[in-house]
Image (cartoon, rainbow, N blue to C red; front, side):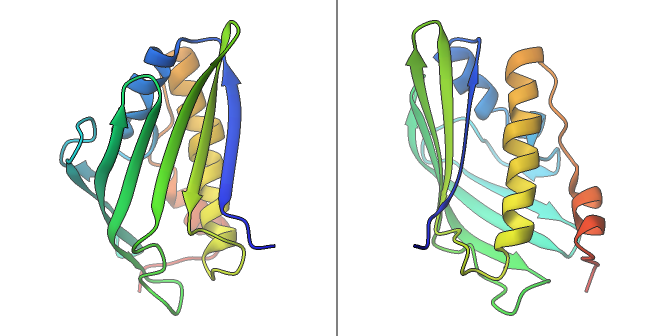
Length: 158
C-alpha cells in the first residue's frame, strides 16, 4: 500500500494557538520564505540554495481547524523528476481532544514510491514533530535545518 506521508502529535495548547503557529511558517520551517503564509489564497515561495525551491498556494484556511497548501511548482536538484512535489497538497488538520489539541500533518502525494520520499519524510519529521511542535509548545521553533538534513543525505548544490 502506497500511503501519503503523515505525522501526528498532541500538544497542551488550544486549536487557535496551534493554528497561529502553523501559519508562522518562518518560525518553524524556513526564514527564507517570501510572501504571506497566513491568508487564504496567498502564494508564498520557499528556497534552499539550488537544492529545493517551491511555490505554494494556500487553498484552505479554516481558523483553529485546517490549513492546506497546494504545491504550484517545485524543484529538487537531487532526484530525477525535479518536479516531484508539483501538484501535491500539504495538509494541516487541527482537532481538539479533551484538554489537548491534535495536529495531523499529511503531505498528499508524498509516497514511499517517490524518489525523494526518504529525504523528504526525514525533513518533514524534523520540521513537523520537532520544530513546529517546539514553536507551539515553547514559542520557539528551529527553522533552517536544511544544511544538516542535506549533509546527512549527501545532497549538495548542483
